Amino acid sequence: MEFFELVKKRQAVREYKSDQVSREDIMKILDAANHAPSGQNQQQWEFIVATGKTKDKLGESYGKIGEGYAAQWEEPAKSDFIKYARTYGGAPVVIAVTVTASPHPLVRRMHLESGCAAMQNIMLAARDLGMGTCWMTGPLNDEAGIREILKVGEDREIVAVTPLGYPVSWPPKRERLDPDLTRIVHWLD
Image (tube, rainbow, N blue to C red; front, side, top):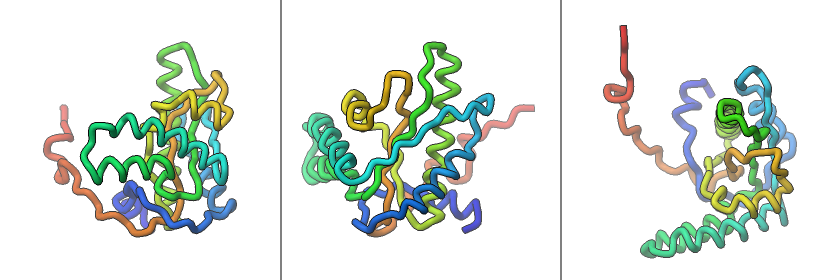
């Protein structure tokens, strides 16, 4: 797929087939993440790949948070969200991106931004291989649970997680809020 087509076809997938993703494909995706730009070229990221029972534990943990989060929602949105949270949409893989923690605000920001670039590369590489992802920060509302399940030490900061797998179907692409870029691009001479 050409780059600009790839960027425009990347979208959040929330329902996955149970088909397994090969370790080889996961490593291709993570190699792309490892080639993301990083502040001062420090490459402070690490990637945690959760499958099987570990992924199931993440879903149980996030499901509890999801129940509270969606408590006031109307059906069927409420039960759909809780089901998604408990299973990460049925994806066979969940990837967490972590970066080195820092007490210095500017260094912390640099590391988080670098981790975000790595996450974007994960999503683009997955789409190029015919797989879906969904950038998720909601599970970070259960950061203690994620840290325990994934054995993430206090020396690391969790940037985001994404399910990874083959989509049941590609969701319709959502239109951009400003498709002709008239409100969001500002030219200064």
